[in-house]
Image (tube, rainbow, N blue to C red; front, side, top):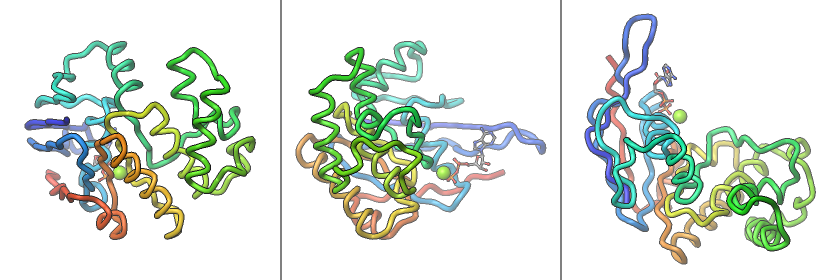
Length: 220
Ligand code: ADP
Ligand code: MG
């Protein structure tokens, strides 16, 4: 499903170019759930952004679903990402002007050109799975950090992506909320064979994943 070969990423820094990813190989079969671990600064977010087509590598090849994607044009990347990839950022980036169910249904509204009763029903279904049904009409400003993160997780799976990429998605969650998020992801994994990559430091999340990929820092 994902095949990243010899991925290189270098950032400029005052002390000269800093290579964060030096020839990283990372593959995942469809339906795998993998934790990406490594100390802070080891390049977890950098790797996830590349896998999620948010950033481009300086070198290497990236195949997703059998397609070489590093050469795609920007508008093709947008379409590919909206259809195939869900992404949960370390910070949730909910849209303040939209209520909770519209935030969750937003990827569907982008695809279909607007909100509808059908999209609302699906959003509410996801919210209820997370035991947050009561928040459907609330706005992000009124939510706790943990509620916002769970809503961002629901949004990321709204379009039933083939691949879900989560960058430290459970940082501010208590154990019960963490279980709700991981149970939602694992249920989707069982039902629709979604492939999941999660950057995390969390032992509970690591244990819930089928595989752990340790990113060894290559700082210069
Ligand atoms: P992690 O997610 O494992 O904590 P990151 O991928 O965020 O690590 O960052 C890895 C390294 O790359 C850090 O040293 C960080 O400062 C650096 N870095 C990340 N993004 C940029 C950027 N846009 N410009 C320059 N340096 C960056
Ligand atoms: Mg990070």
